Image (cartoon, rainbow, N blue to C red; front, side):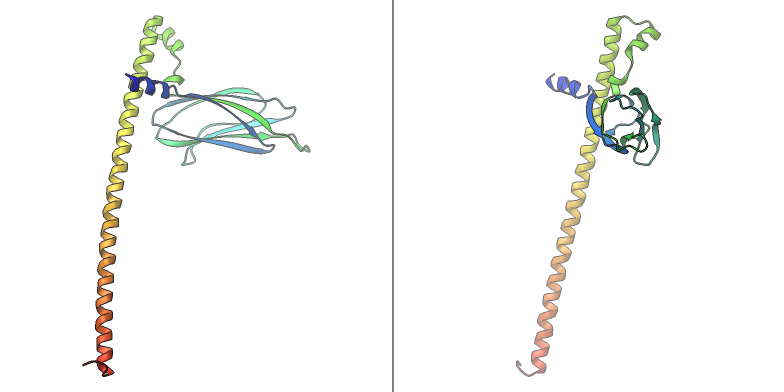
Length: 204
């Protein structure tokens, strides 16, 4: 029961982060997210006269999942669904007015994914669910997420174990091969010196 509660807390996949973006520069955040997961984000940028900002969300293959450039709104939202298990990069750019040195601006970013990103209020309206039914649906989704997460962790553990065993086998074979090479080289060196000394008549 304790493990389930801990997992439930971990799977409350929502976090808020604040960071500064330099003038005419950008800051990027990366996160590893599973396949077929809904991701939502809310951002807020400190105001600046004449300033604009851009937000890009891409994966490791360079595909753009969300893009908004040179907008002046200080608040906004975005959402996307992951197609593959990947590492996603969220970049925020700060565009200062022309002919100005500019100043850094603070960005507040709230990310949610999985169960936390699902809008249960809209689901309740669409399916005409009671509050208790909505809570049960949320707990059911959370339980499914926990099971999938444990299955994924088990799969990763098996992959890492197989990789370790394969690496150990290769190191063992390389060590045996190195020892055989050293033994062969030592025997060749002894025979060579023996023939050399015989040729010089230093030994019989």
